[in-house]
Image 1 (cartoon, each protein chain N blue to C red):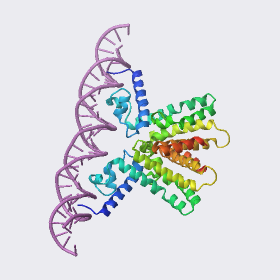
Image 2 (cartoon, helix red, strand yellow; image 1 turned 30 degrees about the vertical axis):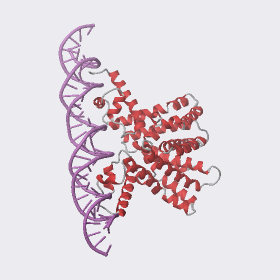
Image 3 (cartoon, protein in one colour; image 1 turned 60 degrees about the horizontal axis):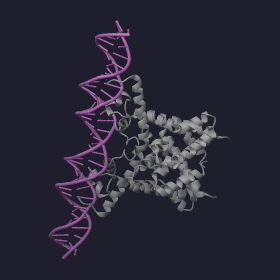
Image 4 (cartoon, chains in turn cyan, yellow, blue, purple; image 1 turned 45 degrees about the horizontal axis):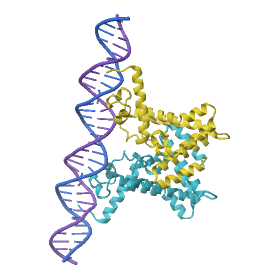
Length: 184
Length: 184
DNA sequence: TGTACATCAGTGAACGCGCGTTCACTGATGTAC
DNA sequence: TGTACATCAGTGAACGCGCGTTCACTGATGTAC
């Protein structure tokens, strides 16, 4: 049963969106092609009409995950409200909801270690996504070396959430409270 | 062919050491029990004489990896040379060698996302390891809120290396150079 | 200290299972006239 | 605009493979006397 070009494009979007969520929750090796296709409402056999292999989907999903997660920040910056958007981004990043729900969160703590073991396409998408976040954060800063300070802040946020998710509750609470108190 | 108690303890140490390296290089799901046993010079069947299951080995290996990686820092602090030891630790952390060789590096960027999906034992070992690093870094600082500043610095280091490993070369170079210039 | 036997560390085959990928098939869509 | 045919999105079975774990077996170690 062939499907229209528009329907195919919608299928692809659903696969990428499903993958973007599942990859953040379960990791690259913990997310099977069959799982992600089922999340998108299809069976696994049709996968290769859309992607050459699993790696290609991972690369597309990483780009989509960055775009989705940083959309409010990017929109605020585009609207000329960079400082408020950046403050909201930091508060959201260090919030309990973000720590508890990696599937909707930043791709850095959720997927970076897996992407480090992936191909060039996924790494390029990852680098571009991280750079876009830092560009937006830098737009909210004033004074010298804004871009450098944005990079260090983003690295600190990602490291804090990464450590919190992997630690016992007491350690997680300590690193998060500390990060919230001093967001650089 | 039964083996002496001392030989069994040595076998266990070899398994844990092999796992500590392979888990950092390949991740939890990318490191099979058979691979790690082969690294330790044994076949996979004997594994369950030492550990109840793969999760138990992961927890032991995380503790060993933290101890191995932070040993120079801990030794320097114990010798009363905390500031020099902390400076060496930061330089080593952000060095090209550490970025290129996760198998001998900090467990945070290499394994945290996997440990976040593991059981309580692995998370407890992870939290204890991270806390020990921060305790040692705090010993090198002066002034108020030393422990908080040590946590933020460690989170920034881990985030920077995590992002660098997962990004294209240009982005990796930028985040590393930035982290080196401002280590908080 | 010497002997007889129970224990158990390590081996290698086997288990059920899920993985990424391939393929024959279907029928609706796209295209050529 | 209508028709005939080629295309191809999606299905579901199948492939070879590696996974975590179990188990019967071995022979050296540990223990009881």
